[in-house]
Image 1 (cartoon, rainbow, N blue to C red):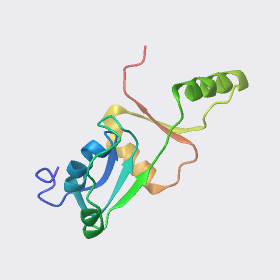
Image 2 (image 1 turned 120 degrees about the vertical axis):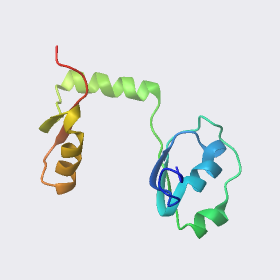
Image 3 (image 1 turned 90 degrees about the horizontal axis):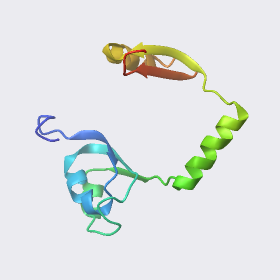
Image 4 (image 1 turned 90 degrees about the vertical axis):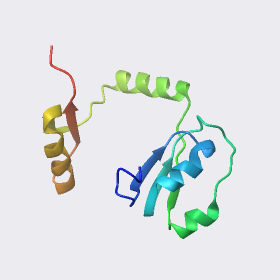
Length: 120
């Protein structure tokens, strides 16, 4: 990551590996970066350098998600209630940059959809 950013490091990391990956994740971060810790695929325990977190002024946010059963229950509830998301605008994959610019403008209300596959 540092090589790809000219030595600067990345601003945002979605870390799904867990504590077993944290040293590598911290090393990839730019000063003031944000780490969203979502998973534990690489283990629940491992070394975490709090000194490096402070020295790089990193923000570490742990995020918990529900169980598989919780997700199945939610899907059933959405299907039963007929809830549908509000779609503001759709973009083709080739328009990805336009979709990001549209989101950054902050004028949307609802979801911005990216069509990734050809319509059938």
